[in-house]
Image (cartoon, rainbow, N blue to C red; front, top):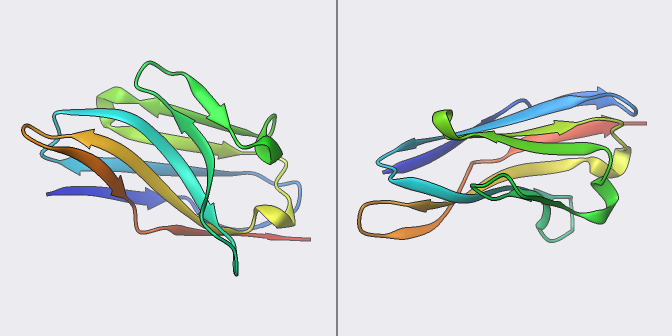
Length: 119
């Protein structure tokens, strides 16, 4: 069984910072791309940032220059450093990872962590 466990969400004032972490555990052979998605109330889940196993990154336009995604392959962990937070960044943030096991591969999701930015 594979699990993704997120941490680091919370309540912060506009202009503040938060750091999210997501650790994958279980019978894992390798991890390909990892990413962070968010879902605001009444809106669809959207990709915020993603990182390949080689370290290439991409970001949703509204977070470029403010958010930084990184990963520690030895720890099977992905991070999202969020700076200069805005109220519109509020939502539930989900970790996603494309994980290869010995026989199968697929996408796995974390349980989500709430981020609330007050104005």
